[in-house]
Image 1 (cartoon, rainbow over the protein chains, first blue to last red):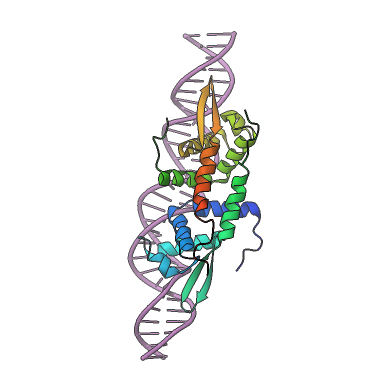
Image 2 (image 1 turned 120 degrees about the horizontal axis):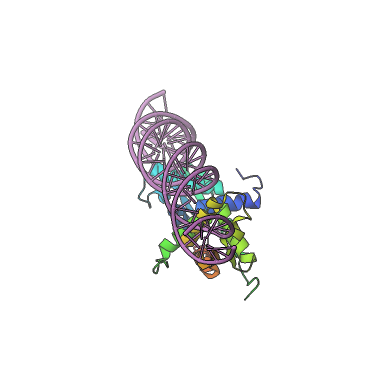
Length: 103
Length: 103
DNA sequence: TCATCATTTAGCAAATCAGCTAATGGAACA
DNA sequence: TGTTCCATTAGCTGATTTGCTAAATGATGA
């Protein structure tokens, strides 16, 4: 299910919170470098923590909108939402581009 | 005190953690749009939480390296470290630029 | 030196987070 | 239908975060 037009601030808040944990950032990178899609199992086996722990991190990522999920038989496939990531972070960062009131 | 050449991952970790709280992000923006430097008091009076609360957020920002402090008489002046912010975040984000393994 | 101003530190309580194990859900297949 | 496989949810615990109030610090000025 799509977050029903989560407003910008709320979205930023969730994205930033999701990015605060190193494991979640790592998941995003792994997803990216493996082509953007991986099953939960493929993701989980790359990390040293227990499966349910990874599973919860994945859910947080999903709730932030940074990944989406689809079912394929008994697997769940996680997809990186690359544009949401780069846009959300990029747009926020953009406020800081250019000197305001340069000395 | 300067963090003695904090390594990249540690740095990223602290920056991301610092950015996870909306008030801390807001402080950075306020600092930026006010020219990069403000006293603790000027910052604190712009937020609705109590002074000590803001003070602690400022310390977290300082520990992440995103701001630095200098004393000026009995005031403390906080300075936005704009390059650290844009470099740290920009470099991380850069991993996600360009399609890897497009289908 | 004593009071004052700007700000931080100490210390506490409530909320949230992150890890674990055990139990559950649901598709596939014998 | 029952078993197996992939993955999640439930529920617990300990650590961390965030807010508060009250006390402390440290520079300035009378």
